[in-house]
Amino acid sequence: MMRRFTGDQLLIATHNQGKLDEMRHLLQPFGIRVSGAADHDLPEPDETETTFVGNARIKAHAAAKATGLPALSDDSGIEIDALGGAPGVYTADWAETPDGRDFVMAMERAHRELEAVGASHPRTARFCCTLVLAWPDGHDEVFPGVMEGQVVWPMRGEQGHGYDPVFQPNGYDLTFGEMDRWEKNKISHRARAVEQLVEIFSDG
Image (cartoon, rainbow, N blue to C red; front, side):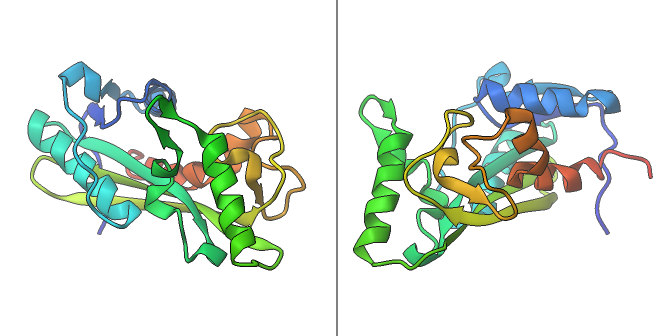
């Protein structure tokens, strides 16, 4: 039986202001006050797991334990079938440079590796998002969201972020990078995870 959320305060275990604003907007109708990791001076814990749910759990439980508040975290990335599911949990790591993240470099690497293995088309892939809501007593609930599609080349579109310009979701002719932001947000892997999450706050 899924545990209901009955409080009025929720910590979003992220230092990303965009994610924080998105969740604050989403939870407004439920009368929930949202704070972020920076509001509590929380460090970013090391993500040492090899799965999205494992890393999301690390972040959520560390934040809940440190603050005594229920905490929500997410871990997300892209899995490319012909690369054995890579980059997966290392999606952001592929973009790391000494000067910050460079996702064009990451997308070029993905394309280069696909060419190197002679991957056939369509080059199937999926974006994954796993949300974990943890309570200070150690309980948690998990909400996974997946968007199936394919990796295309060359990059298309200036919208979105990360690998969006090379990901074309199933049933669409546009990449996430070409889609209107709000249109993408309605169908994305994160949207699918959030749809499940919202059930926990409702009385129905």
